[in-house]
Length: 383
Image (cartoon, rainbow, N blue to C red; front, side, top):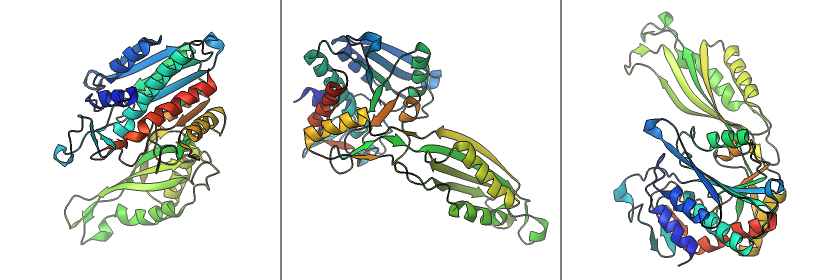
């Protein structure tokens, strides 16, 4: 059994449902310390939701003048769902028919193990490496993400820590290992819209004001609006309604208020303040009495096809002979925080098909190549 597969299984065996780390970061820290990394554990968050964060760095011979490549990721996993629906225990790593099963196998403990073993091999093979290697690992990515990567980035910024390249181990591959790298992500802007009406008996509509009825034209206008056309990296900005609620539950009462949850996934062609303004203008033009509570989940970021993406694409080509697509599709990630302090940020990892699902798994045959890809990326950028 390869060292990477063995460490992946050890990490899967750790019960690390958000915000628990389950001992994963201790395993990682001890391995890194043995090859010369300085490690630091940072506990954050309230007592009822404590988050564990790991920072590790091994400086190269160029010291602070050398470039820094950081591996980033999370040890926390989503809840298992009904245990009886799993073929085997989700925290007992199990190999069947060439697949390694367990919660976190795809998202993202295989990547974490690959990071660690790649760094070990690189340091041993290149003891006088010029650039520096860093790790930023959190147990608060699958949850609220208030006390993990975001606060660690703020901390690193205050300390003046230089970061040139960052690889996040999210599962990005689609059909085969290496076929997709995420070189950016769309922004996420959510809103909760409250439209006021006048509650009344449904038999006397002239005494009331139905907020569902008066909102319908505005909803249609929002759905039909072209917010932007996107660009070479991003799809056009999308507007989607996720929840609508109104009424008392009785079938003879005109509701007094309508609440709508919605979300923008937006490209770099739009700014949050512009989207807010345009939406509120549409609502005002419809004559609605409304309020909107806004939450900016993250701004879009993009890394051009530069040094990091180029090195990773070459490593993929050399290792698995796959030509890689750069993409910004999908949801948000911790890249939205890291991109504020690091020049080039990409995401790459195993096939994403089973992430968060019952019987989550990875191909065993992909584990060793994934580690090799990360090692070869190190060799190109900081050796």
